[in-house]
Length: 246
Image 1 (cartoon, rainbow, N blue to C red):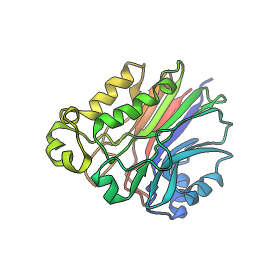
Image 2 (cartoon, rainbow, N blue to C red):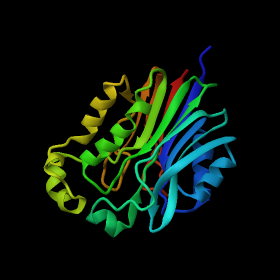
Image 3 (tube, rainbow, N blue to C red):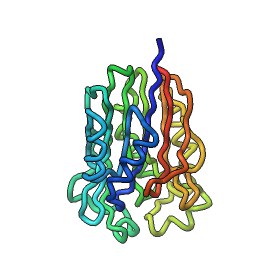
């Protein structure tokens, strides 16, 4: 007998600390599994009131305040692993990152859900840099992602780089010559396809600039539905929901 699982990925936007909006989102969408980035301590407290099992790792410092990546579920989480991409004194990657006050650790967090039969990985790739640096961060998590078997990879990939934008982004983000020709979303899709994954959603996830920066990739699970939710619940990113049959 198959089981339907609702999985939410959401960049909650750490600059809005209102935990009530997190509860409102979870009440409205009723996900079985929650994957988050930019989660503040208050956000995580709201999640922990609804889910019995929550694991977290570092995301980044915003003006000295640490936020987190996290995975939550009602069923137990096991085989927890974390890939660290920077230490506490990591320097901002670019002029823009320094100006915005970003220190991006962006730990990659993974956990198995034996009761549901798949593994989940959460990542958040750097915003304040060129696409080749994000690719190196993705490669640093490749061993986690390349494990065989059913898996869901959910994240804010910050996949905004396109050749036509390079003249605008090169100076503030410190582009090298290799960054200029990068078509980041299609390059990410190809990278995951080599590892047996397919993208679960299309469309806009970052409405301010009409971009799809968030994505969920699935492998060896049956995807029933997937898409971005129109309501923002106080974030600058739309929540992304998929339904799986396991």
